[in-house]
Image (cartoon, rainbow, N blue to C red):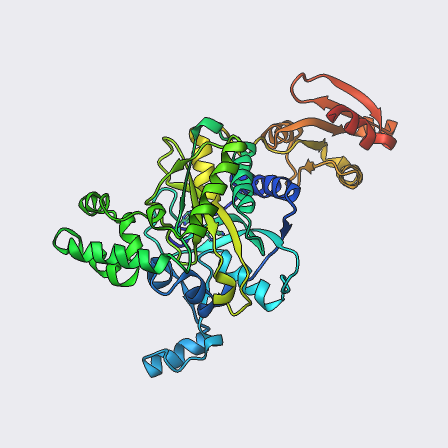
Length: 436
Ligand code: HAM
C-alpha cells in the first residue's frame, strides 16, 4: 500500500473543516485591520530563503527541502556537484511564508517609495525537514500576515493585538495564552550585541556543547535556545538583548509596551527570546498555550532590513505566522473542536422504481443551495434511512410510488421521526423552511 510521507498529514473531515475555519476567522479578523489575501508559490529560488531567513539558520542549513526536476537530478548525479547550477535552477519548498511575500512585494513593487503601507495575509502549507513529533511536522500549515512599509511602534502593538484577538476568536481561553516579547535591536546595535554574546560563549567554551561553539561563530544568539540544559544554565548569565539596545530601539520597545498596556494585553518580557530566523529586528514575540505541550502556536516580529535583503528599497516590515496543527492540538486540549459539526444535510430516499423522481428532487434541492445526499447503490429503504443517519441528515425526503403519483413528497424529521407531506412542486422551500 502506498504510504504518506513521514511527518505529513491528510486533511479531511472535521480536521479539514478546522483548517477552513482558521482561514475564515483570519479573513474576518485580519480583514477588519485592512489585510488582503495573497498567495505566493510554494516553491521559490533557494536564494530567496538564504537572503531572507539567513544562511546560518537551522531552517536554511538543515531543514529546507531542495527541489530539482528529474532532468536536473541526472545532470547533478553526473557532475557530482550543484555548483554549476544557475540561481533559477536552485529551488526549495518554502519553509515559511515571509521571505516569499517580501520577494513578491519587491518584484511587483507593492510599496513604492513614499507609498502607503501594504497589509497582506496568507494561508498555506510550509515544509521543513524536522524530526517529526507531536506538533512538529515536515509539511504543516500556517496562517500569517505581513505588514510592509510601517515603522511606527503602534504597528508592532496592533499586530500583536490582532494576533491575540485571532486566538481568542478561534476559541482559546484568553487566560491560557502566554505572550512573550523581546527586542533584538537593529543594524545599529545588534552587531555589537552579537559580538558580546559570541565572546561570552567563547569565554565559557569548556562548559558549552559543540553545537553552541559552532553557533558562536555562525549565529551566537541561537545559543539561548540550546536544548542542552547545562548550556541554558550558562547562558542565563549571558548579556541580554534589551540591555544592549541603542536609544532608538529602546524608545521603540518602550512605546510598543505602553501601547500593549493601554490595550490591556498581558505579556511577559523574555530577554532571551531570539527566534530562529535571522531577518528580525527590534520587536519579536511568541505565543504558547499553557499546559498544551505543543510549543509555540505562533510567533513573529519586525524585519526592517528584509526588503533590502530581497533586493528592494529600504522598507520596514513586520508580521507573524501561526501553526494550524499546533492550534488544533492545543484547542483540543481545552475541549474546543475547531472543526465543529458536520454541515447540515438532507437525504432523499426512494423505492427502486422512483429513482428518476429522486434525480429531479436532488437537483432542485441542490439548485436551492441545500446540501443533499441520496442513494447511488440501490439500497433498500431501511438501509437508506441508516445511511441518512450516518450523513447526519436532519431531514429525509421520501419518494415512493404513491407520493410521486400524488405529486407530493414525505418529509421525515430524523430526530423526532415526525412525517408530513408537502407538494413536490415546492419541495425546496418546504425543506428550507424546516431547516431554518
Ligand atoms: P515560525 O516561528 O518559524 O515563524 O513559525 C510560526 C509558527 O508555525 C510556529 O509558532 C508554529 O506554530 C508553526 N510551526 C513552525 N514549524 C512547524 C513545524 N515543523 N510543524 C508544525 N508547526 C510548525 C515563521 O515562520 C515566520 N515566517 C513568522 C513571521 C511572519 N514573522 C514575521 N512575519
